[in-house]
Length: 337
Image (cartoon, rainbow, N blue to C red; front, side, top):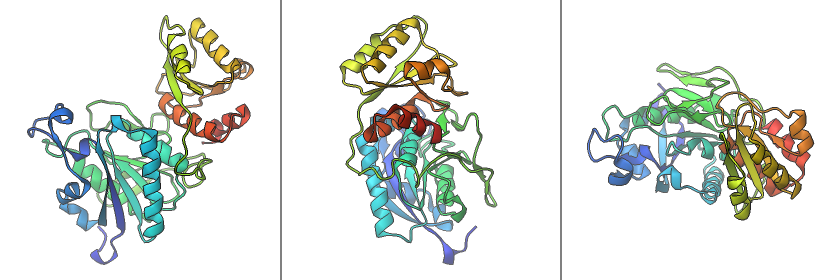
C-alpha cells in the first residue's frame, strides 16, 4: 500500500453504467437499469472510502447513461475531455473511466486508436450495481485506480481492469451477461493482474496503440463515415447489406461464419458493394481465431479482419476511412493495430 505522502493523483471520469447504479433493493440484479437510480461520479467515490489509501481521486462528471446509448460523437467528446485534462493537469498520474459494460470494450478500443496523451487510461465498470449484495463495483474501482496510478502501466495503451484482470483495449471482449469475470482476452490472455500485494504484468500489447496509433492526430470534431456490421447465418441473403447501403454506409464489416465465410447471396452483394467503392472487411462471428488475407479476399477486394471482433473492426474501419479510401492503406491499418 502506498504511503499517504506519495499518493498519485487520478482523475475519475463518470460515464454512467451499472457501476453508477442503485437498484430498488439489495437483491435487484436485473431491473435497476429501468427502475433504479444513478449516482454521479462524486457520489460513487464517497461510497468507496478505501480509495484514499491508494490515490487522490479527482471526480470528473461526463455522462450518466447506460453505455448502450453512447455514440461515436460521445467518444470524441470523451477523448477531448481526456486531452484537455492532460494539458491542464499534467501532474495527473492517470485516468479511470467508469463505464457501462455493454460497450466498454468499444469505447476502450476507440480511445486506444485516437488518444495522444502519455498518462495511463483505464476503463472499468461492474456487473452488479453498487447497492447489490456481492457488488463487484468497489473492487473494480479500486483495482482500476491502482493501475492508473502505477508508473509501470504507462506505455501499454488503454487498459481495461475488471475482476482483478488487466486487459488491453485491442483484445478484450465481454463474454457473459451476468458473471463477474465477464471480460476476457480470448486468444492472448491477461496483460497482468491486480493482486493484494502488488500489480503484476505478464506481457505488453503488440501493434500500434495509444499514444502512437495512426489516428491520434484526428481532430476532436472529426466525423467518421457510417460503417455497419452485417451478421452472417445459414440462409442469409442480401437484405442486411442492401439496408445499410441504403442508409449511406461507406463501409461494411461482414461478421461471417467461421473461418470468415459468408453465404453465396451475401458474397454476391458484398462483391457488388466493393465494385461500387464500398470498403468491406471480412471478420468472423467466432470469438477465437483470425481471418487471414487469403487469395480470394485479396483478389475480390476485401480487407481481412485479422482477429478483431466485428464491433472493433467497425471502429477501425470508420477511423481509417476518415483518412483514406486507399485499400492497401486500410489493410495496413488492420495488420499493424
